[in-house]
Image 1 (cartoon, rainbow, N blue to C red):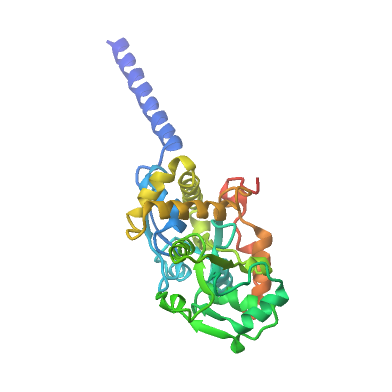
Image 2 (cartoon, one colour):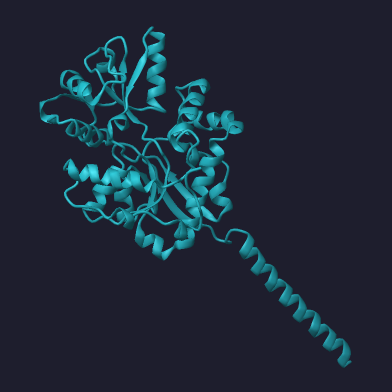
Length: 350
């Protein structure tokens, strides 16, 4: 009688140990049983500039890694940094000037990845009316003194243009500035010579319209004149990162994976189809052109891995903003940029 009992006990113990080992292995290899809920506030509306985020959503990349992510569009009335501070979001997207301005005023922000290696914010013009391509700094100074420049007050373009003007020795108060809205009519009526746009999105659609008019587009890129402001970057708060490091690492990797997959040539048509669900007024052909332009900005035409944080560019952005009076207090840039050691990944220029 004792032998079967002992045998039965041994079998039960073995089964229990096997079950524990299987549970442990599942925890190591797969996402947690209960997905972690987080909110992600983008900088702008769903379009080609959010391709990686849309791909991660559509393909379930967040879900596969144990994250239940609510992705919220951005816009002129939405501030990702403010939502981080209020606890309404755990992650967001913001440009360097937004981050530095907020941090200089005491905000708690940690930069996890840099989405754009080249700032897409530029000024478009009609070549039939304006000729400033390749102009020197001295020539551009004369150009800006006579041209009417569109500015979105409170937007990224305001900070960038003010820095450009001051670097050229111009007083913005004495320039011909036109406060713009979402209505492009002043540009088409030729009331405004230089119109701010994102080169990879509005820049494409405006260029296509000019082409139908028999005109050609030109672009004023502030980077050509030393104003290298870092654009869209993935952010969280240092407080959240210190309390939930594994969630931050997983989320960052999901976003970067989404961008890597979204920009693959083999996924171009599918990515355009996903974006077309939101950009209903654009043709797939136009969206594909936007994705191609976005890829060049995100990878610096293949020179950088996706997500690379360009520290020298951040330092330069901070220096320019301080010198031009756009921030009143210096920001220790190294304290707001996450290290690869913290994120558990190695990325950099190719």
